[in-house]
Length: 224
Ligand SMILES: Nc1ncnc2c1ncn2[C@@H]1O[C@H](COP(=O)(O)OP(=O)(O)OP(=O)(O)O)[C@@H](O)[C@H]1O
Image (cartoon, rainbow, N blue to C red; front, side, top):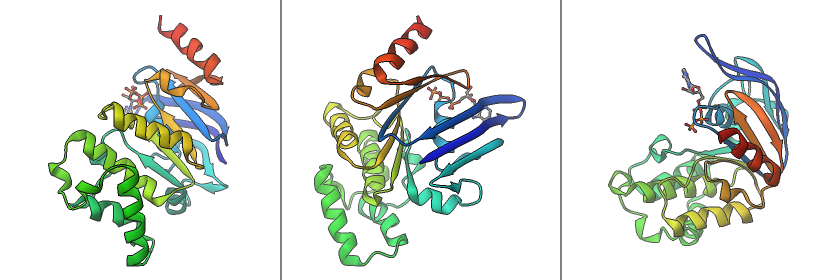
């Protein structure tokens, strides 16, 4: 479970997130809200990329401030901009990187890569230089890289903005199928059908928290 207790995030004089108290344990959680409402900041709190200015965030009891490394292993993060997360020159090296860091054997890494390349239709890209890929190909590689690590939580911040329909569907199908907990930040309200819970942010506050059938009309009312 991820818990937020009295969490505020301040930057200079501005309060970006204001007193969040939440327990997250549903499998599919959507996050929506206007531009600048605090969604990305909220998402980044969940794996310790941003630390609270006040209050605490814990993942299975681990404080993101004190146990950042353990938290990052449990909570994978897919950025909107794949360049924030791709480190190695080639696609294969990049996806293998996290597994090597976990001291997997070469054979196990090979088996996982084969599985991931096949599942996400990336086989032809293994030896390609990441900087030569298209934006959508890079976004897919970044997604596949996180999926390869099978973290218990996967936080995705608008992960399909560069993807065509086929790859968007691939990502959404994965989100629907995997057993891990998903936190999915999106502007694409249609994609939240079937989610267990949707959080609506409005100027740094949690304005609504409930099932998609209620959260989406609430958000649409805010924006008309
Ligand atoms: N380091 C920072 N310093 C000052 N302001 C910041 C900083 N980081 C974020 N902000 C501000 O905090 C607010 C929330 O930003 P955030 O990126 O969380 O919004 P968002 O809901 O994800 O927006 P979008 O839908 O546009 O991606 C914005 O007004 C942003 O300008």
